[in-house]
Image 1: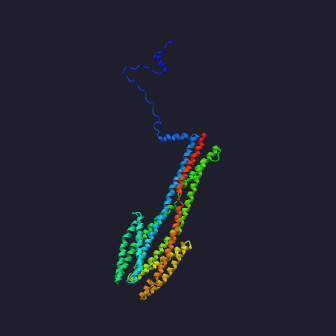
Image 2 (image 1 turned 135 degrees about the horizontal axis):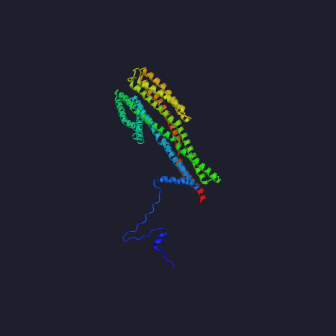
Image 3 (image 1 turned 180 degrees about the horizontal axis):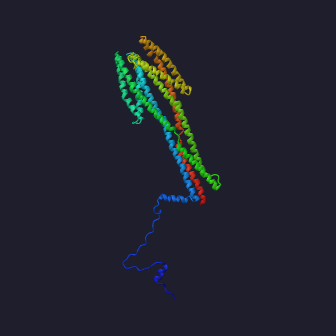
Length: 475
């Protein structure tokens, strides 16, 4: 007969004590197990680094790391390329649609003001009743300058140097036109005071308006150069990332071949193809952009600057030629030996000759060279007629000199009009050349940002799929 073991023996067999609980006491609860987590004193970064180290000890883990690196490199290449090319495309678009038009408008403001001054003097010399054609031309010049100033103000940063020059022009232009109206009123009455008002108006134009317009042109041309330099800058970061991604992809495929003897991994091959396409597209598009911008600068921008200088010189020479007869020797050079306006005319004609010679060298086709040669011929004829007019004036034949300057026949005024018209044709041709080349430079970059981003995503997907194909062999 067997007897059940007592409580103490059972407790001893289980390895635990079973002392009876006292009445009125609460049995002790077992302490909860500590939550799972990183060891004390170690952060998530340390744990992640440890897991990465452990993964690198196995081939599947190394493949996962390689796939992540390849995807990151290809996506980064596509994203950086899209950002850098977008920045350069924006700069190229600014060259075409903002910087160069503003520079051209600033030059047109200068030309309009100078032509208004020249026309006012010519109308004054015509007699007490100004010809309607002269009055209409003067009004058209002032209207053009005012309109272009409004346009420039709306497209210029309010805190820039250009804005300050525009404010100066807007302030001084009404003063100038007021002096011209006073000169006309006095001239209609046959008062000599009209000549004084005209000379004072010319002084305002020469000392305040034209210098401000010249500074505005210089500021806008400088902004054009900055945008041009930004558009042509090489995307070195994109190129470096592309070469790095391509190198790692080639290395990954060599590694795959060495371990499996398989020549191709379709996913990695697709990622490599996408990277090569973006890299070659980037090189080709940027090379075309730089070439077109170089062409726009060499055969458009530089020619435009020289032709603007030539036209401004011709306008200045014409104004001084007219004022020589208005002043009748009343205004002398600082040394008091020569007529100031005649000396200024000579200097302006010398600048015109130099600018035309440079423009002829820069012209790259007959369409651009022809108007420049016509201008040079007109300028040579102008000088000869001016000598004849000066000879008559110095001989005391004022009316004869006047007819040689503002007459309807073979006068210097007609020569000036021929020079000005030829320069306008040359400017229009070079403007077309510049716009076409700069537009081609911008268009070469248009589709690249979107294409680089799309190919970057496709390349990353190909790299991941290619690595996953290898990982499936371990499952």
